[in-house]
Amino acid sequence: MLETTAMSARVEDKVAHDRDRREQRLDGLFRRVVMACALFVLVALLGAALSMLWGGKEAFQTFGPSFVWSTDWDAVNHKFGALVPIYGTLVTAAIAMVIAVPVSFGIALFLTEIAPGWLRGPVSAAIELLAGIPSIIYGMWGLFVFVPFLAENVYPWLDAHAGALPLVGPMFQGPPIGLGMLTAGIVLAIMVIPFISSVMREVFNTVPAPLKESAYAVGNTTWEVVWDIVLPYTRTAVVGGIFLGLGRALGETMAVTFVLGNAHQLSLSLLEPGNSIAATIANEFTEADSPVYISSLIALGFLLFVVTFIVLAIARLMLSRLSRQAGSHA
Amino acid sequence: MTRWQRRQAKNLVAKLLAGLATLFGLFWLVWILWTTLSKGLPALKPSLFTQMTPPPGSDGGMLNAFAGSIVMSAIAIALGTPIGIAAGTFLAEYARHTRLGAVIRFVNDILLSAPSIIIGLFVYELVVRQMGHFSALAGSIALAFIVLPVVVRTTDEMLQLVPPAMREAALALGIPQRKMVRQVLYRASMSGIITGVLLALARISGETAPLLFTALNNQYWSNNLLGPMANVPVVVFQFAMSPYEYWHALAWAGAFIVTLLVLALGLVSRGLLLPRRSST
Image 1 (tube, rainbow over the protein chains, first blue to last red):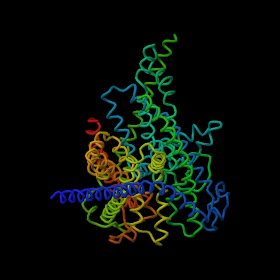
Image 2 (cartoon, rainbow over the protein chains, first blue to last red):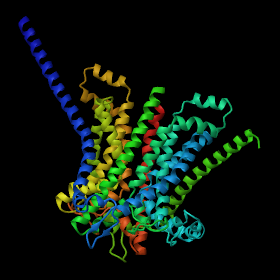
Image 3 (cartoon, rainbow over the protein chains, first blue to last red):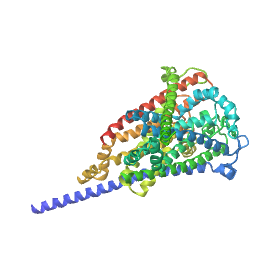
Image 4 (cartoon, rainbow over the protein chains, first blue to last red):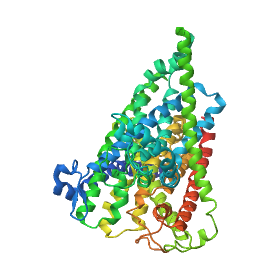
């Protein structure tokens, strides 16, 4: 009797022990599976970079480094260069930032310091709606509504008045067709405003209230508090938010494809149609008829990838510095 | 003007400009939504959902495009969600304060805002070139790469919101860690994770660039996942760029439905998330 109890206790011990080991093994397996999935994210980004480098290899080999600064784009003679799309990408993104940064700052200022409490929620939700609209809708609205509007009402005036100015004049001379760098820049600005303004609004809200209150208490105006207290306090994150918007503007495809005009030319005028990296790829990829043509387009994609990676990496580093800062204050 | 008046005037101008900037932002929202509504609504008719995309100049609908978009989105969600939830689990539960976790989070954030056309080129190299032709499967994989970072990010954030006491209570009862994660943590953060999936769905419903040279387009109905398949964004793009008035109307109808869907998904996910935020 005594023996059997001891034995069954031993058996139970063994069962429990086996179960523990099985559970441990399965726990380890679970951990490895979720880790593999997380590593897959790393592999995806690396894979994207390598596959585009591989796909663009032929173009880089054929044209050498001059691919980056050559203005050729000749499908018949198989000569390709990236300067025109690079120029278009940079110019449209620059126009977008010139418009979007001050506007976003104004929106963030309004939503954090000026608007009454009941207005803040609805207005910020509405601004964020802009970020949710698919980019193809921006493109269609741009092509069918905004372009004709600009061509009829704004660009003829710009051409006549701003075009006559010294220095900046040549930037505003051109046929008032509505398509072009300036239009694309404005549409891009509208698209990135919600991203930049929501980052600014969030980081403005991280400024400790006592800091602002003491500034108000010694008689500062709202503007002085924002300019001298809030902005210096959040400077890195604000720059991070701007870079986040810049990353979006550089890589935006569909909206730009609609309104940029798809003209492979280098022009100083912002009213002339042009081309950007993303729009060139979207327009021409399925029409590319030779391996070196396809390879050149993928090489363009690789250049875009490198530039946006750098811009977005800077953005994330600057934003993460703020979250650590905010964490230490909390 | 005294110094005091100057400061007050400056303040007033700044406030005025900030208000104008906000109106400027809202102005575009209203204009764009109004355009989509006023051009899309008249173009809506039953034949949109019963007929295939037409050849140039004739009447038709977008049935094949809607079906293709639904199929590809479903596959993309089915591929991207499990991997995304698993990766988010790893970040929140196994690598919260580790260097590897920080690196993966950083890369995921970059993937989150990377231009979608680059995803298209990547999948073109990865799938289309290997298979030798465009396919719905390639389109789904491209969309899955857009779903992935969204789900990783929300899962990670939502799991981090679960109080440590819940984990400790479960583990103290002797529950193995994987069961604790699945039966306690996933349940506690269910609405947040679903929100992430809905947000991802909203993002891919309007994505055009990654489909242009993966799924391509198809004028006819297709049940073949290994061949090109019609989808709403690419059809809208092609029809909008065409010179035919009738195609423009179809494009506006498609654009209207996509916008409606995306905004509705946004509202639903907001509704799912709000009660959570107020309770924590």
